[in-house]
Length: 188
Figure 1 (cartoon, rainbow, N blue to C red):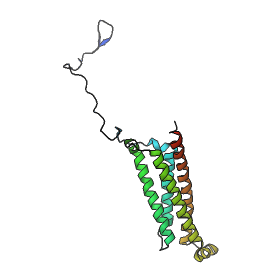
Figure 2 (figure 1 turned 180 degrees about the horizontal axis):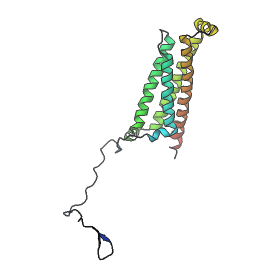
Figure 3 (figure 1 turned 120 degrees about the vertical axis):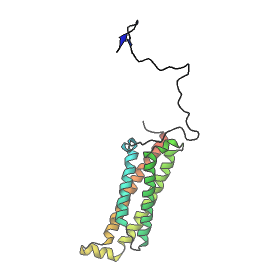
């Protein structure tokens, strides 16, 4: 039951807890060395352009792996699969890093690190795609299969190489975004 006191404010029947002269509790200090940022799930990063590009890189990488495997003992396909699987794993690590906000828990120059990673990934993806496409299209089996309209494992290798070129463009555009962030600061 609420009643009015002398000043016209509502008076609660429940008395406030006793303070015993003690100050209210203070929050615990941030842990040393970690920057004080809590690890939490951050799905909003994937609504930004760099976040979306990371997801596209992951999808294109998965398509490249699916089209390029198995290698059937072709060394160019082995190299291609090594590069694509390596970049797929590293991109997944970046996705987990941003998903759990670990980039804010560690104080590192993230735009420069990501610019270096995506630049190196662009170069590796380009080299792997070119090596694969040159090797596959220079064999007689490929032209025989294309001329007669038959299906061949080489057709999937060509698709893997083309998707790798698409993925290279995505890596290059993300590299450009990180370059802009590194030179001019984060966009607001």
